[in-house]
Image (cartoon, rainbow, N blue to C red; front, side, top):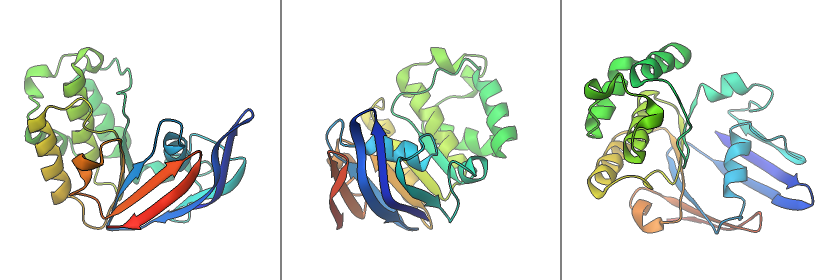
Length: 212
């Protein structure tokens, strides 16, 4: 589903990705690990079509995420480490996601409820003003409701309490079939029961790629 071939990305004289080649397939749950500056975020942003590579390419189901970005992103859910500064109310956000990404509003509410987020009591509140944990729960609910074949989580549990983490893992286990789940994480112990592949990056290179 995701094919990364000889991918190099530079920022000035700094090489963030150094000739990276890897593939991610259906039914794989991958932990992408490495120190800060290892190239993890650059790889994810390249997959999402944010960056133009200096060399090599990324293909999502054979499509280029830069040239065919709208089409590619229809099939990807992404939850960033830092929630975006969305000024919409929850009601407006749900309406926007429903129309723009063809996502069932009731399904968003269902997953929010499963994450112990009371949407009805917060519909008029600005997403921007919610607590970090509430924002994360909302983004997770949207990512699951979208029913994408590729779901990317960047430190997804950073703002979640232990109960919410348990709910998150339970929902993922129920929704992992026929998908690529990609976790960017510093805490392998939190996702080790969910993943079947572990990739370590360092200095812009994949230094270890193991099936577990």
